[in-house]
Length: 224
Image (cartoon, rainbow, N blue to C red; front, top):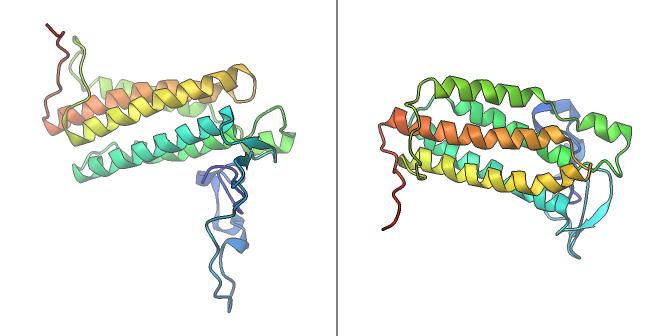
């Protein structure tokens, strides 16, 4: 769940890859002797509004929630591609794992619009710009093992590659939805930079997967 549909915890409240067991609110779990199971639904969004990490209630079609939904879909697309890559024994899947965690931090930052954020909010959801540099290093390393790109290619090259290309197109949409809220000053510009570089990474790793699997990439041919 993205921040914040009334759940006890969410990426905005507790960034996923920074969470420690003793930081998870105990109300998420049944206490000793208590057999009640926490409900996944809260009904707080039934009227078409949801909450940001800062406590604002905004319409669900707000740009903030549009961007959150796209980031969530992107993580899901990468998760699906990762499963195909695991089946083929690719060694880069740890990178996909890290990217999915970073996307939780992307969501946390998006869910904390600066116009209503306190300093404590901003401190907890600050985005780490170093992750973009990490992506660039991965791209450079993968590119070094690929044949030069001389023609336009179509999403293809086996299931792993095609799924990674699909994730790339979702990434582009996520980037487009983040752009206006970055320009408005609500979201950290480094989030947009990360998404921009992530689409380049997904294109590169899709080609890498095709090469490693010995799959042929389809070449674009102009229709007659």
